[in-house]
Each structure stands twice: as C-alpha cells, then as structure tokens.
Length: 514
Image (cartoon, rainbow, N blue to C red; front, side):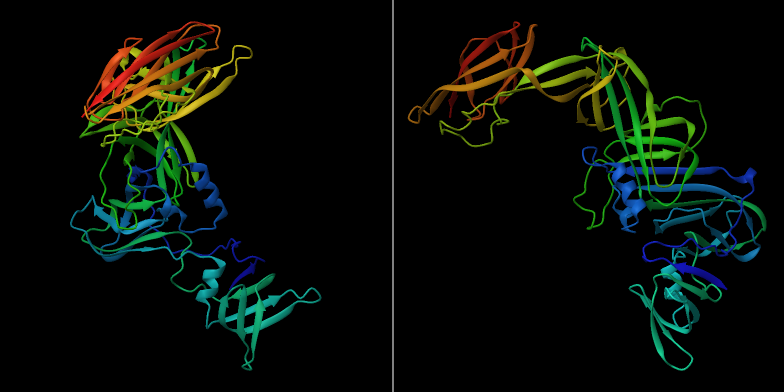
C-alpha cells in the first residue's frame, strides 16, 4: 500500500519513497567517467545564470531547461553486468532533458553486442502523476473536515484541478477537495519512475562484466566567459582574471569531470523554432585529471581548444565559475578619451545636401581602456567572447570600486581589446556647424565645423576626436587647424592634447564633389 498527503497546493509535490527497477551497477574499476561537451549561444549582455536558477527552483515552468541558450553532449563509459543472449540494461543517472533521437550505445568489451531497442523514460513519480495512474482503480481518502475526519472509499474516476471524483460501491459519486486529504493507494502501477532512465534491449554473446559507452544530447546546460580587470592607481597597469561561468539545469550532476572548451563560431543546423537565435556557438568538453591551474589553450581546426588539467564538478541546478587562466598581472593598459560629436557613423550611400543634417553635436566624451592580448603583456591566449568588468582600487581604504563593463568578441592573440567604461565627468565637448554651402551647378558643397574640448581636470589630457564625413563619398579637407589622420573612407581623427583647466579648439572645412 502507498499512503501520502496531498498538500493544499497541487504544485507542492510530496516526497514519496517507492521501489525503482534495479539499474545496472558498474564496478568501480570499470568506470571511466563522464565526458561532457557544452555548446553555448548565450548572449553575454543579457544572459544571467541566476535568473535560470531562480526559475528552476520555483518550478513554475517544467520546460524552462529547453529555453537555456545551449545544449550538452554527454559521453560516458560505465561498467555493467551484461546478460547472455537477450536482456536489458537500465541507466538511471542521466540528464532529464535528453533528446532521445541522439542516444547511442556501444559495447567496448564485445562489439558484437546488438541493441534491438532503446528508449528514454521520463514519466516521473509525483502526486499528480500517481493519481492519473490510479484512475479507474480503488482508493481510500481520509478527508479532514475540521470536526472529524471523513473516510471516502471507492473508484477514482478523475483527479484534476485540485479535486477527486470518487464513485462508491453503491454507485454514488463524491467530489473530494484534495486539500488536506490523505490518500491510501494500492501497488504502484507500471510506467512510472523516480528518475529519468535510459533503457536498452540487447542481445549479447558473452555475459559478465562489460564496459559500455553511451552518448546523448541534452538541453539545460550552457556557459559564458567573464573577465575582471583591476586598474592600478596610475591607470597604466592592470591585473586580469578570467572565468568560465557554467549553468547546469539539465537534471543531472557531472562529478570528477575534465573540462575542455572550444571557442569560435561553430555552425549548427537549427530547427525553424530556433532560427533567429543565431549567435556564435561555443563548445565546452569535460574529460579528466591534472593540476590546479587554468585552461591550457591550443588551436583546434578553425577554433580554439581550452583544456582544464584537473577534474571539475558541475552540480545539478547550479551556477559555477571555473578559472579560465591564472591571474595575468601588470598588463600594460592605456586609458583613452574619445569624443565623437556626431551620431552619424559614416556615408550612408546617398548624397545629402540638407544643411541641418548632422549639424547638432553631442557633449559626452567617452572613456575607454585598451590593451593588447600578447605574451609581452602577460596574456597571449585567445580570449573567448564574454563580458569584461573593470574595477579600480581606492587608495583611501584599499577597496575595489566598479568603474564600468563592456562586451568583447572572440579575440585572437596579438589583437587589441578595447573596453568602453562610460563617459568622462570633467571633460566635455561641443561640435558646431559654422558654415554650409552648396553649389549644384558646380556639383560641390562645403561644410565647416568648430569642435571644442574643455578639460576641467587639474592635469593635462589627450582626447581622440573622431569625425564622420557622411554627405558624399568623394571629399577632401580644404582647411584644418590641427593635423588629422584619415582612418578610412568616411572617418578622420584628431589627437588633441588639452592642458589642465583649459580648452582647445579644432576647426576644419570639408569639400564634397559629385
């Protein structure tokens, strides 16, 4: 007999101890462990592992794991007792969100073993599932009436919306509220399991201890890269730590796993339901053994492979960080002040001769930190795309204060990393159109600007002034007060040194011809 209490709310499931079908228990010597490959399409800007963990704990959406931006490929070698001839094997320690079409089985001891059928059973025991299985079966309900309990015996006709429909021996029907009702049920019906289970029907020529390898894909697991940069008091050196942040809501823990990470834009065919999510795919693979240090990197096909030389534990329903590489210290960094007075990025493809177009300027001067990902800077490992947070130590009390964050893309070694931290407080700019002329007969127009940078700091600064040339593709600078550099076909840049507590002007005229 099985007895349990239905809670006041159906969503609060009782914990029920029931017998489960015996699973194959491998001998410790035969177990080689789990290999986990995790593909991630997580957007570092919006993906927050804690949101998914909170949602999983609330249990409001049983399909939430399928919405996690990524998936895993699990490979596992287990020791089993193989029956001779026709028999079956059951693995219960598997992920809960398996794609059954991806399951594979291989007998490493005897490759002649044949799998005739395989299936994934996930109809797990819960109070509501049990009641559904007992429809048309005899039950006994003890209902708390506040004064004295009332016993209801009969056949369960229905169980939904928090109510039981019970038909007595005399044919009468009673509706019983499940709230504060104790039910006594018969033997557990078939088809229910306490844990997700993979089952195989096999035909083996040899019985005894075998090693078998299984693999499958599962939803509910992903990762992203996170970086922390700490500036020194002079803003010329920095230390950086790098982490792999993993989310596991796949319904299983992965213990003593070795971790490999492949970073790059890995192509994956997607169903119509997933199209548009797009995004670079990143792959992490869990394998075995090593010292306590960061990932070791090497080129792998057209991507990069990061190997963690020590086992890792990835618990179920967890968000965990693993060091990508040891702290890189004394990285030479450069603080940049950049003024882009126009919101227009460049020539848009058509000639523009409206005088007011682009005439209004901005005042904010943006602050950036730039460093080179090279061995000479104590870096030189290709960096997976992720979020980079920047802090600076306060000399007054030694505390670290957050000063900004930005996203970085996949960055090869020897490439520069540019991180935007916000806008300067004590440095402002202005951009004013001082003249505009258009002569359609001569097929030319000219435009003049005055750009002012005001430095309210008590020390000199250098500001990079970036100007877009957006009216037409054929242009030349006819007059300028400062030397400039042509960066591309639509952009020029000025490097302006501004003394402490002073202002500096740039004036220039550009001529367009068509």
